[in-house]
Length: 112
Image (cartoon, rainbow, N blue to C red; front, side):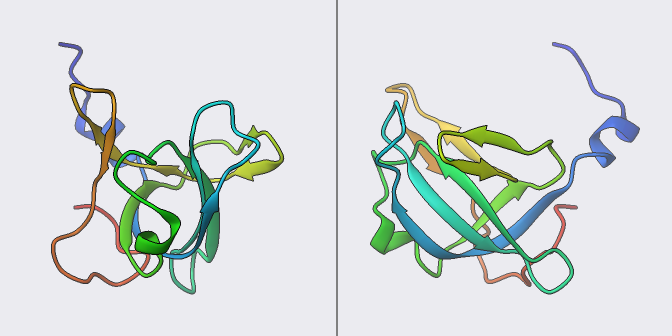
């Protein structure tokens, strides 16, 4: 295992946000959903694409809080510019279950 130092971990901006828009990403090579996520007033709204269609639909994502890394460089994914990385847990079948808080958290809160 390649251990991180505490300083390296502290550089990761893992924040909670609320999904305010979700739609099937028709142009994606692999099934995915385009997300707009509200990270609160200080950070604002960020966009991402997530390959989470095995367990989620756009309708059941609206209003859901998720965790995402917000300090990766922006990445062009087809016609959208992704500016955060939604986090989840890869299952043995390759599907992804989102990493979410178990209680409502303030948008923009940082993982401690």
